[in-house]
Image (cartoon, rainbow, N blue to C red; front, top):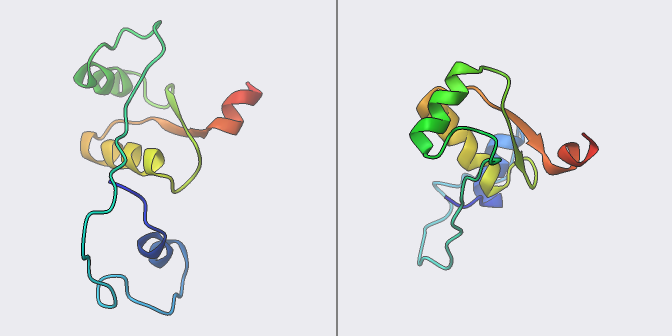
Length: 99
């Protein structure tokens, strides 16, 4: 999953002058952007399943850092949250540095 400005703008802004599905057609895979999930060593979670279980046990107590809103890591975590029904809060990295 890679964030595309053309696709994202249609949900971020009320009005854009195009329909990303109707007006564009994919022609090739140009790049991939893998994402990884890492946790602080003090967390007991060693697998994704354990992390999801931990997040469910501690609703609102876990936060994750991203380079910013709408970036690939942010959207991947939002997708994970929607699929796993776990509750973590987003914390852009600038906010993490202020802690």
